[in-house]
Length: 498
Image (cartoon, rainbow, N blue to C red):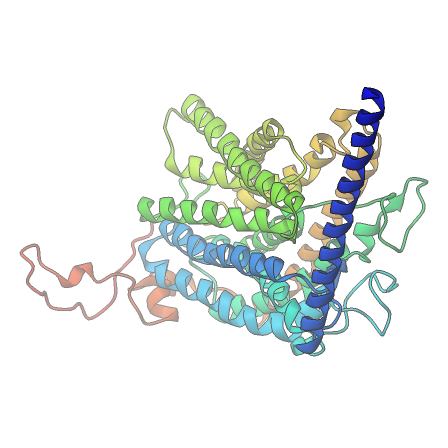
């Protein structure tokens, strides 16, 4: 009898559990159906990347994380301004604001359509065009429920463009900067996004387990994998920065031995802190959904790994700096921490925390190596943007196939070799594609005399701020020590080449 009672109780519990699960699924189905109806009522259409009609929670998640990434523009502006001379500050701030304003227009008109637009009337992911998107210009036929995703992806595009700003600071004409910003955000970057982050992009598709090309998303395919853009955003931006810094030439007074010292370490520090804060949205938001506990856990893992990677890069390279350079360098710590966060982007959701710290450390080493090589080549990268983004980004893309806890080689997963091959191929494609377009554009600008501010104008009264903007970054010279207003100088500050 006790046995019968226990069996009956077990059956009852099982029945109640199944009923509860079915009720939960029914409720979810009703919620999804209501969400679809609401989006359709707003003119919604099936969204990109298989995310059809994102829920209200996910839409808010995109807006929140996108706002954090958007705030990185302020971090870039402060870091770049502090790393250059005082007479370049207005120029730096102007270009960062232009990235936002001009970039918003270009992403609206062309960029988003090239990156995520479907082709013809076929449904994703069966669309066979894996090169470039061809719908959604000016957000036409894009439902309101997709706008949050559009906004989030625009902040990534703006980040890729801003990387170039600091590397070419202090000697580049504004018309040249506007030209390559439009090309990057309107064509070069969106095309790479189509290849890698769109389910029918040829780099993302890769091959299936038999080595054959696949044209539909599935569990058995493995191609280029880059969670939050170590290669797609940072290597692309770093490559453009390298080509630009090389072709525009060094600033007046710059030497590979001494460089040119920045004018404000507080700005460098504040910029680094803001960028670190923004990386929470950059990597945490890249889970692209916030509807389940699994989504929340993935975002949490990405955020924790991001902070640990910054720690790995900053701490190890600061010890390195003390050991080899005999100095506790603030600039080295800032750049190395950022390089660590750049490196972990490729697999922030796929690493155990200890692995993220190691990846960040390697990102710091990558920054150091690329920075030294660029200086030895006598290329003036004004803020070490290439070291941080190109060096850190490459390391991140190459290390994911080893440390990925689901498919990594260090965990005995042979598919990691396939991922490594495609990630190497992806890096080569991104560097060659970006480098070729940037070289062509900068060559045209150079030949037509629209690339570089003349040496005389760089070293003249007020430097490039006076020449390009007619404005001064600071007004401290307007005040006497006792607080009385002094006579305003007739010309802006003068820079003496070091």
